[in-house]
Length: 61
Image 1: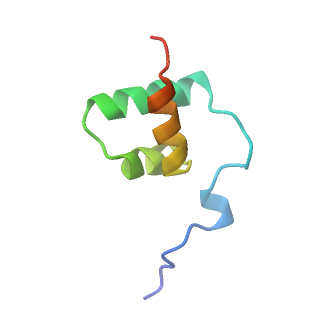
Image 2: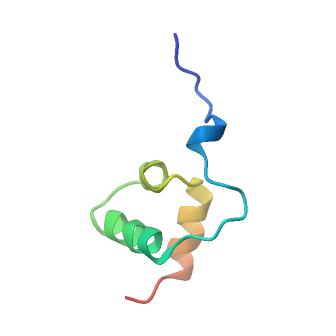
């Protein structure tokens, strides 16, 4: 196995950086399409908990 099951530094977003409006919209769109929290997080390059909190908080459209 050459792949590590853990994220590398290059794959994770900078800690403490806010989501952009574009990233928030992407989260909403992927959620409407039925993507899981973890798959959305992989697309947006953030933690799945960030996706959860963003969806719970909601983004005005």
